[in-house]
Image (tube, rainbow, N blue to C red; front, side, top):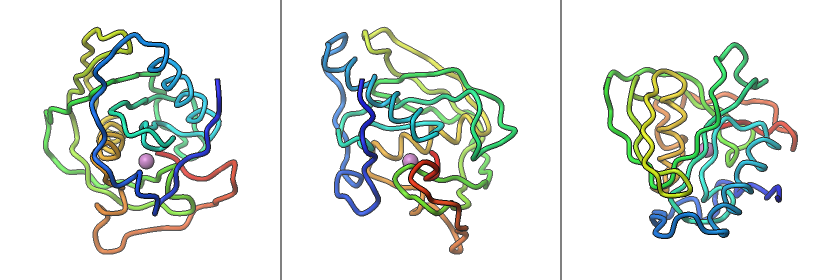
Length: 174
Ligand code: NI
């Protein structure tokens, strides 16, 4: 297992459309997911997408127990989704602050849909279906944006950004 440095804003990897995973259950896929998990935990993320560790594949992780950046949020069990697809259940837009491991030092107020279903596959290719609302749904939308080469900064309206502490150990979250 390896903690990989997080790809930072400005790197073209973050602006590419990532490729679907076509081979499941492989050592490579499981190793990549293990690296994503280690990196997410080490950087206090609440989610991570494969491009953030330099791999343009359609894989996301979501989950945390307790997070200093988002105090008071209900914990989310670890969820790994390969080739995720979002179906919006409640299209109501809610604005809230979010940050990104790839954008240290800043959060932005981003409108996101209130509720969705995330469909995809687990690392062995078994279908998964996850219902999410509120902050949980926000993380899914944020991570899936990464797979389409999009950062939250492009969704912030009226320049609603705020500065956050940005030491290397505490560099913002998904
Ligand atoms: Ni992010």
